[in-house]
Image 1 (tube, rainbow, N blue to C red):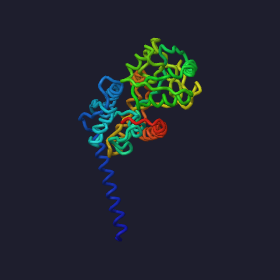
Image 2 (spheres, rainbow, N blue to C red):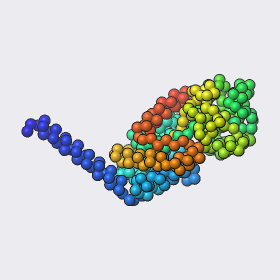
Image 3 (tube, rainbow, N blue to C red):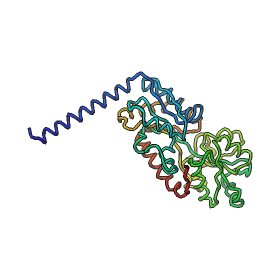
Image 4 (cartoon, rainbow, N blue to C red):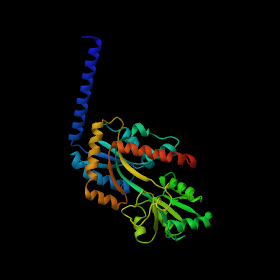
Length: 328
């Protein structure tokens, strides 16, 4: 036997052993009855927590093990990333994270505590959500056209409330102002609730938020959602047009949340979680509850999430850099 033949056979044996090890590892993770955890970088009782608990309840059946939600709030979800990076690679820990982790923080923060390409292993997209442009009491615009006409006559009063600076809401406002031809001043609040109160009270002329936040106030007539950023009308508000319909095709885009595994997690383990996610989101009751929360179920796998994250980063990087915004 020559050396080349020997090396080839040794490589094949090594590869076969690695495949068997991965298969055994995946089977062990799948059959483990100990609880798995979904890390959530936001407080209990919020929208991320609600989505995670909905998933945990359904995914335990497919995974054949208990699934717990572990809230680790802080730094816009980045504290949970630290814990994910240090977590076992055996499928016992994953994280539900916002799109900002891959699409915003790398460009708005001078330094981040993780590498999005290496430390966040895509498992699957959970849901997506449009952003809304909301009118309040002053001006009492009933359409986006009415607001734009008012803004051009009152540029010094043209502003928009946002739950926080550096979020997608902030940069959608910049894009919208540029498209309208009127510079809009952002007014940051400590969350959605106080921003909506300010809008109802006339302290700000408009607001930008995710669909779920102003949905009930819109239905009650306290606020008016004038447009959504999705590429088609959403089922929760079929009467509300998209920005594209109204002549603003550049104001199109969706936020999303997704599941990520620790760096170095074997693909078989990732796919085990991904299959459980897709199965959970195919349940009619889960889809209905997500729609009621103001989000749209997705349920796609690792490749779709990787592509979605890259596209979101490519979209927001030039906008953020052009704005000059830096969060720290």
